Length: 259
Image (cartoon, rainbow, N blue to C red):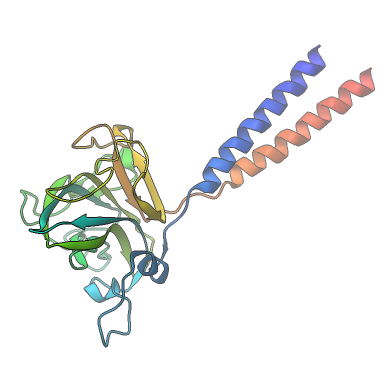
């Protein structure tokens, strides 16, 4: 009886480790600029040798993540509104201009636009730069949630939102986004109230989070998190599986020899 309990306990531990490892493995890290732009359907301006995102002028884009949805705007046009919070670990220019990089958040429609970054004063709000982010988020600085509005004329748009690192990825950044709405037309799951990305396509490191992340969403319980932070490899879980299996087999052999 004891032998069965011990062996069963180790098997349960192994099963849990396998489950956690599979979950971790399904998460994705940010992708390079070429993959990101292909996903978003971006092409560089005529005569520009670098990518469209690098062409925004913040520096050479190394990697990023994004979400995408096709929206339709009828005759008369519409206004897209959303709330977003840019977070980064990059030192702000005022702290150390030589160390500061300029990662940025962007949207793709009606034109590709950098709407929040490490160097920009955030017009249209009371923010004049970055402020401290809750340590729970894993980021040092944030803009805080800020409201934005974009005018869209009649048409069909591949509407994308994303975050990009420049020069290197030693200082991850992220974008929280919520409360997306379109005054006229079709936009699905704008506050991510389904708890997932239903209605959206994603690439890179993306997830739907609650206030447990460390920042309260402005509307409802959910908000999208788009990040350039690397997702840890599930090596720890692999070691747990191997170690647990070895221990379980050793216990079984020991019990069999005693029998």
